[in-house]
Image (cartoon, rainbow, N blue to C red; front, side, top):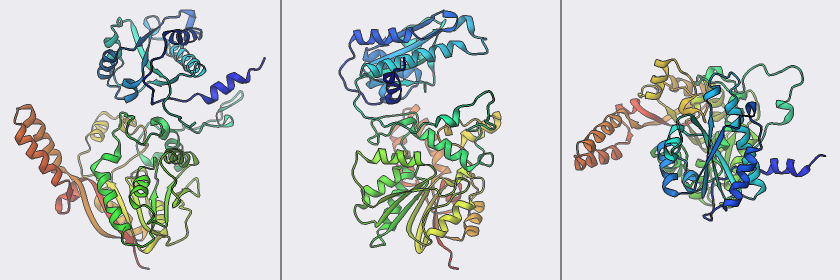
Length: 464
């Protein structure tokens, strides 16, 4: 008999990242584990083990040793560490221990939803052995992630899911290229792949905006580069009585939100432009608990195969593009669209990653011939531009450079190394002086700007 209750349960399950402090009763936890053990296992071996962590000290130890870095690991009243004995199947080509554990974890998540308990599976653990060490698990058990449990203190929306017709095949698989590429070189990515990648990966952190939920990525809202950008945009917006502002590829909407909160009712329009309906939905869900913003409008890219900003010519007084050109091998289509919608008296602030800066993670990948997404696993493809190269692109697109500054020039990297050495030697006063110097010299306007980590270009439209 068809049970509508099951399908409703599956569709309403959400990942919870904020928990109430009240504990989950032991009877409920036992029912959840019982549901997990009802899941099928490879060869019926039933070799999972579940360690429920409720002691705050053990949780803190497990989080620290595993380098998990998620705040809900600490906050959840109960954390279920899932282990499996993989000894018999290390060479199994079908990876059945992992499949078995995954089925048990999903059963646990559905059971938690049925019990009214919030849950989230945390697989982003850099060092799973740290979980085993913290709970004293024997070496033959492998940790395959944790499930954080507790009564929900949030109301997360549903992210967009792929339609069934997009993933269902009969007798023959019609998919001819991967959805995403394990390669950061932009020339290999189509705009459709980039849009799909950003649309799905955007949701992995949830929609919280109060900085309570921590993740492996630092929040860019607190980075010096972001603070410099928002400050400069505020100055430019102040030059117009009723400015129209556009943020190019807004993604999570952090910059748009900052402008809305700082500028108040001054802007006539604040446009958040991006590639997919899912990204625009994400921003709507994030902003809804904060306030209503009458000036805010969401713009969806007008062409799936090329950037197309759906605005008339010359509409925008102030524009921002925060390290988005790096996702394109050829930024000309996007730059031409930016120049088209920029008003003759308007200004665009564009941040570009500088190829001349020693981005160590990229050099390491090149040396190891490993182009997996690495730290950009949630951002997609990227490239670094030489200053002369990006200047040529600006000119070709019809944009004139008004000014250039560099953020975090290369000498600050050397100063940071010196500061660390000073701390290790116990010269803390000297280290503090170096730190103060670094803070004062974060913005470079002289020759060293061309070797800074990020170049900030202020642009206007070239008169025709």
